[in-house]
Amino acid sequence: MISLLTAFFTSFIATILIIRTQKLHGGFSGDRDLDGPQKFHTKSVPRIGGVAIGLGIFATIGLRYQGNAPGPEELLLLFCALPAFGIGVTEDITKKISVRTRLIFTAFGALLAYLFLDAQINSLDIPVLDYLFLVPAVSILFTIFAITGLANAYNIIDGFNGLSSMVGIISLLGLGYIGIKLNDPMIFSLSFMMASAILGFFIWNYPRGLIFLGDGGAYLIGFWIAILSVLTVCRHSEVSPWFALVLNAYPILETIFTIYRRKFHQGKSPGHPDGIHFHSLIFRRILNRTHITDESDWFSANAKTSPYLWVLSSLAVIPAILFFYSTSILIGFFLVFIISYVWLYKRVVTFRTPQWMRP
Picture: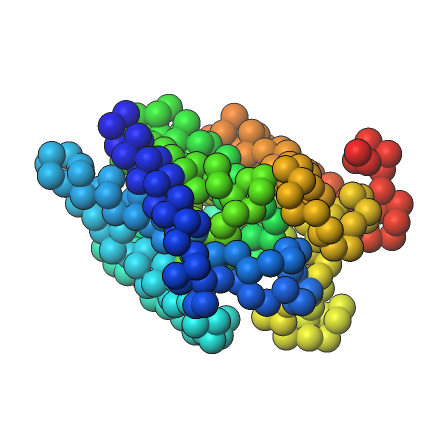
């Protein structure tokens, strides 16, 4: 409990300090690009909220280290997360780091996790495909690809107040629950620790958007969840490999669909931003807003957008933790989730939004 309170209050206080001192650092920490296709704010806002979350994690592990509480895994996970977190914060400050460079640094962190934490994907519980994982290179490359992809996915869904951070909290609570159920102290302590740190930031990010998560925060959350998801599967044989996939179904599917839309439908680079993510469509076509006119409104259209996706994410997390042991059931839920996502996206994008989704 002390660890959770430390993570929360450190992040909470650090977030306040960042907001209160933005006149001093806003010139380099503020999100001043107000015209991009994925921008839904009208004034510069600090985008280094990830620094507060990172400080919460650093402080908590440091406190536990003083009390000789942490195992080597906690320190190693923190070490492995530094490349992704560091390059994300660098982008938040300089606004000049390319997507490719960020992915390379994140992939390097994933390689470190493979080597030092033994975080590896060795099976998908599909006999034919599992033969491929007998080749070490296949396991290494697939693990790095999966971890890097999920870290980037959290950056992709970070479009509205509270969206990426609450989706992360929901997934971490699911991981923590499984950690308790499997009596794995490392999994549940690191899951709840990160969830507490995110919550300290979330209070100031939602609903008013006084501070943004930034690339550093999004990559840190996504990387942390990816590593814990992989470790949960590889440390416990009773957990299906599909647990990790279904638990993170929303950010994964949003990323895959974004790549498909940009590359094959629009003929653009997958790294090129656009304004037709599912969350953007909800904002524009369900809440009928094309811009924000009154940011003083506590529950503006921006704030009302995120709960739609919190519910969607929960509809994947709940079956993942209920049926973590069954590959066949999880595959079934994953297919249902894909069909539901595509159907809803198509209905919204063609102006045929179901009545029950309208406010």
